[in-house]
Image (tube, rainbow, N blue to C red):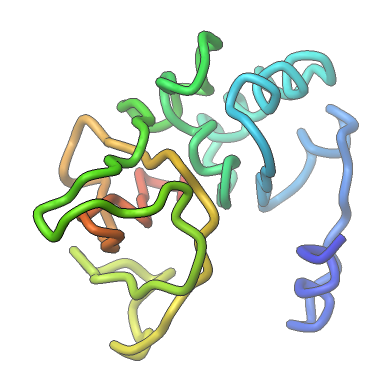
Length: 169
């Protein structure tokens, strides 16, 4: 609901749906997520959305995954046993509780900056001091460095923004 409300506030006309036909006909998709990797993938399979999302991605539909939705874009996660969507090659790993600066609290909850790694329309033009809210214990580790858009730090550095063609997180 909060994502739909923000979309409307920005002038869009978002539709929240778990109907494969509605999702499959969208011109852009936002894959949200709260909770655990396996529960998210199980829900996508139960609603018949995993294959729909893969088809949309291969058809060029823009997909933005946020929170666990970003993690679901990857092949797998240390958090569970389910396979992810496999739209961006890589895995999701637990954030380290120890860093070069000493121990850190997991989950990471709070505001952090994103250090831009390469140019992309979704982050180009962001002010250097822009901060984003994080609440997570796991972070994506893409196989290919070219998929990394942004890095953040919570004791250790972690990937906080990714893009592969039309799939973003």
